Length: 549
Image 1 (tube, one colour):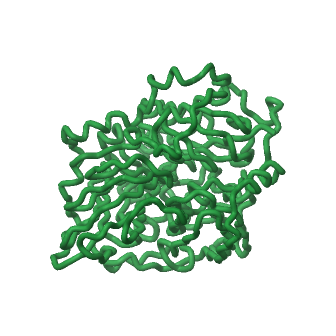
Image 2 (tube, rainbow, N blue to C red; image 1 turned 90 degrees about the vertical axis):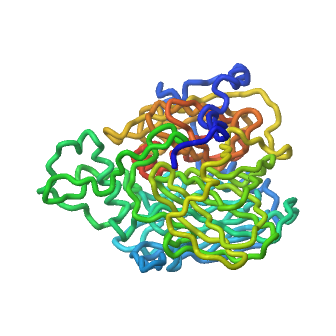
Image 3 (spheres, helix red, strand yellow; image 1 turned 90 degrees about the horizontal axis):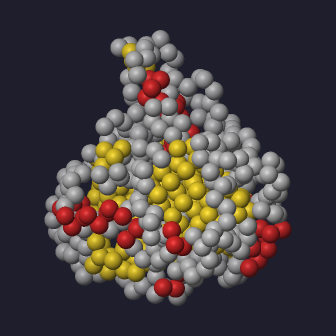
């Protein structure tokens, strides 16, 4: 399924959004050093005082947001649960209120979300909630230890913020590799002046699943951290099995010492979790690190899929969210065209395609006019020869096989770099005030993923900030020096790909490519920027984009 027909050559621009064309847009940008690893970043070392998450500037920015005066209150209880993924697959995992995905949270633009997190996780495990894609107030972003102290087991924390931008979002923990459990749910912010015309919605959450089936995410990370170089030829037959303890504590599990050991077998070292040979031309080579026994759509395995029931001729808005940790999905609906209307919550000029590529953390909204029958919605695990499946039923017909591959998967695909922002959300033309080079570094051999060669320091999150100032037009050049693709996510902001590309908060950066993005520094605080491969981020491919006080 990795062959691509001639109509799909459009993908060539995926990783190169403006490497050359944007050179003229740098506008004599001032600082290219903070992101260069030259040591110009440390909050204490360079004399730059940073805006703290509790600073008055953060509260002032929140006051500027337009409020509807309405409140949406809820409690989210994170606890152990045995969940039903269908087909007799019933793993023990962690979930919000005993279900995966968690219950959808829906509110309108300007509403204040008041969400109490109750942490009932075992083994003194701390957690948090990050509201992915929302440009919210910094102290509610849910990133220990940068914006808050992790919520200890048995404790509660109340998140309170105004959601002032409509769109498709989701929420998940930001501690350790908890993202790869069942702790996630959709967050939909509706536009009371919705310009799209459609009859119904279907929220579609994609996920790669390991927890409670072949192991835990902590065990996966322990094996990956050994790296390929350390694992080759190593006799692990006498090594202890990974600890089943999932406590990450306040440090988010960044420092796991030398205790990590790969899964053992009597015949020597067996790579229980590391995926070898997964390749995709769409992703520029290596497609992923982790063997997943299941790929889910809306919490269901492909052999026992979720079913949407509708009527022929009706127009449905699909809100597609990739909540996975290591898998990009190529998504298609058999027998149908998809009209892309939004990505990462922001509208784009409409484009009709056969299939989409959705990286971890990305969201796409599409419109589809339903045919008559039973149609497979397939999420092909790009490069991994596996898929998730859901069904769209509007009439009579047989259920397709779990491994169905509709022809649309090989049809017209349009990546984010070919999309254009809708006129009303495109950034206004402006001189670039500062440019930061964000080098993505590391490799699978040592599993030493980092930004600018320096892994993020959980014990000192202000150690190597990428410093910006309120009011600046900022250019970030994501320079991927690695052999692997990375979906790069920035908290608290949306950036624009190039000068007229889509507004996004998560963008795929292909191996050996550069992606240039622009943003307006209008949300003071300290914001994580990281690879949304959960294991790359946890290994250290993360940085603090911090406002100068």
